[in-house]
Length: 211
View 1 (cartoon, rainbow, N blue to C red):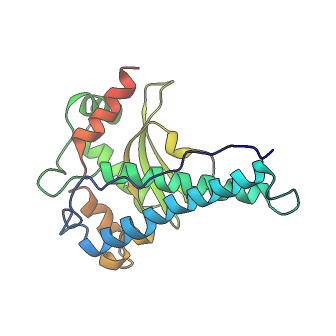
View 2 (view 1 turned 120 degrees about the horizontal axis):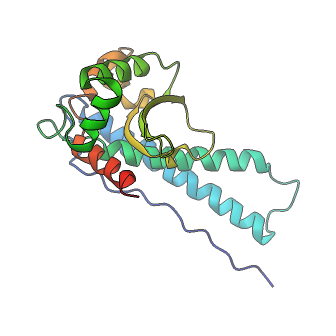
């Protein structure tokens, strides 16, 4: 008797704004390719690996016909890619609604730990600009220490990094900026600050503070 199993599949979440809403800082063409191409590709990739895993569990693919490490590595890469992009979209708002400075508990904690928002912004920007290759720069809340910590990581192959308590996230894969900024990644990083959705970032922090 065949084993009846099925993993729940991932879905592409809707963008929280119109596809041209981040102009002039991020062009409509970039968002189109980034969201409908790359992000959708991660969703489809994750589901494809899950379907293959289902076949292995059911015995339709037998030992010796698959590479378990390769399968799990590909699965984690695509799940992280999907979840990190979902956070990235949420973390921005159209020009006029994003940018500026944070308020609330997030502002208080940044000032307490970094001395000022300007110093935090400087360090986050330096971290982003010094990232070798492609990857992400994030601000996350360490639930053990209560610290807001800046971290960079290349790609997203290892572990479920998307499950970190991420408060702020910047995509630094070339597909996030190259059509508009070419090889001037620092210009993209500077432009991105005009789009940061501080209300959303503060809500994320409040969620972890209230646990």
